[in-house]
Image (cartoon, rainbow over all chains, first blue to last red; front, top):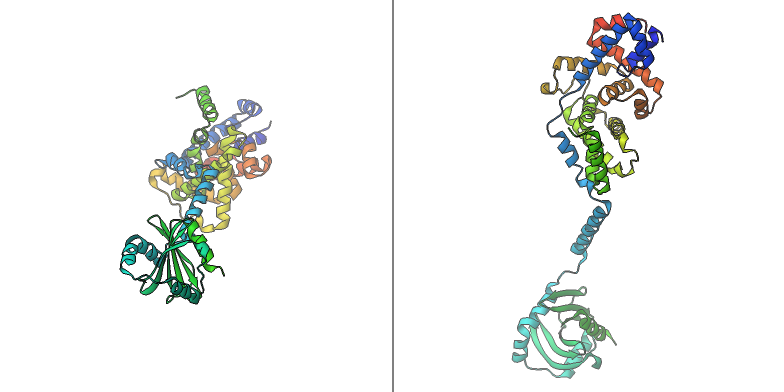
Length: 221
Length: 184
């Protein structure tokens, strides 16, 4: 190795000189001096580059990865749950005010309404239903009571039916049109407001199944 | 100070126990200071440097399961930081501090005057030479390792390091540089 090669090697990496370079420095005073100077400069350079590290750096750098440490399946599950929650919030059928009023009627007013009202005959009820565009077939069940009562600012034809799936209350409201089917659930009861050709019918029962059955029969021809 | 075997056993135990987090922290923990310093001399601002180091650690964490050679973690981290810096620099140039200004906190440097001279000298180097010298002095990497990080040849790295040291010697020790580097 000559002096030129030695100095090139020293400038490329003064701390990792090969044995051949070290041997050259042993025998060449000029290169030895160059190496000493290079190592001093290197030391000075390293000292100047070693800036103080901010306090708590290690903790901050590693702590901030905590969120990223969650397994992907966990993140996926969390996203899925969030999506379901949003879907529920946006899409879950919310209680309709009029359907809720139907439930409240059954809970708090029905008994009094039956006691106060004068029962109407079945012929009148069938005529009203026909005019509204609904039918009251026999399969519906045993009609235990028919009468009229005030409901939601209108006069409703109140019908109490004993169906195979339990007691169902019908409120036929000829004076009220309703844009779309509405639903409510409260106090262990469920209610649907079903729009018909001329008016709406509130169906209140113990279960969605019994309501669905009645709704189907009301719409049958 | 724990012996090397104990530390290795600790890392192994962490892996065997399924503690990925502990294994990761054990592996990268010793590199964080130098990683930050490398980022500091690239960004020339302590806050941006910390952000860059943070991004590097996050990327490293995400890629950790795929890293086959955990012994080479230091080179891997510096490579990530180098690429991340290059990516952010190409995305938005103003992220680096203007040439006239090093956002230096005096308490960060033992010799603030020397730091300013060094900063000026580093800025005078080409980008590849600056990376090469920082990787070697701060990271302790060999020319071959730097070549891998920079995606360059070992010979090109040696040339860059030679030029960088000549330039730095001229700045830091003007008299010695004239004398020693003659004829190279």
